[in-house]
Length: 358
Image (cartoon, rainbow, N blue to C red):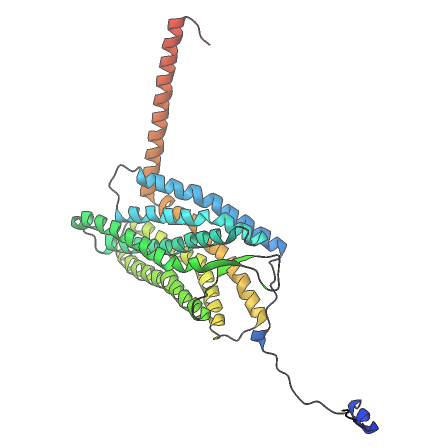
């Protein structure tokens, strides 16, 4: 059975007619268009890499020296000394992850899924503990200056040890989401790998927003509120007292807060914008998305700078710490001179007995 269709010549004329005006508007959904993954300019990448290496080379010896001076002190450790010692551990461990991030800036993530989880877990744990120990130091200085009490010194030392355990436990708990990190390959760049969170349980967007909320609260806003409150009351008390040491302590406190804000505020502001973008509270735009990604990379390097500044702020600026370090260095030099002297005497006695000098 066949079907015969007759087509009028006017039909082809209508098909070829281009005089009609198409008034149908087509709106592109920006959420459906993936952003092109743009790498940092090579010069910018090299600059950030060199900055990270410099931070690493300063942070490791600085924190090791501070930890050595505190632990070898012959005097009983104050709560501030205990917090500072744990702060040096947190900053030192965070600094150990810096070489990995320096490589990421140049070549992306090259170390596999397991190291992605481990390095992220170490970084996040010490990210929280470092800032929380800064808050603990501010609380102790507030208690020492505003509520000085010698009778509670031994009990405060015991409480400070328990508080350190609590800070480490809280830091580890808050860093557990780092175990969800995996190595992924962006869709528009087959040669670049990234170590990023990959939530496959429930709503990934809600998980990210919740974790970012904890990061903003416990990693910045809460410690900053504690530091500002304690140091404001402490400065008010110092202003009512006289003496060079009191005003010098006030100057150090102001520097501590300013450096903390300069290092961490840009990073957290970038993270807040990134969180608002993920929650669709800021209109999505590919250029804005790319700018935020770049800002997170640059401000993260600036935040890591705080790990090598801490030893200078909390230790080398302090007169008591410098005095302890001089005493330890003098003792070390005296021990070396004594050992050299003993070796010289034993060599001289051996030479006299044998009648020859080599």
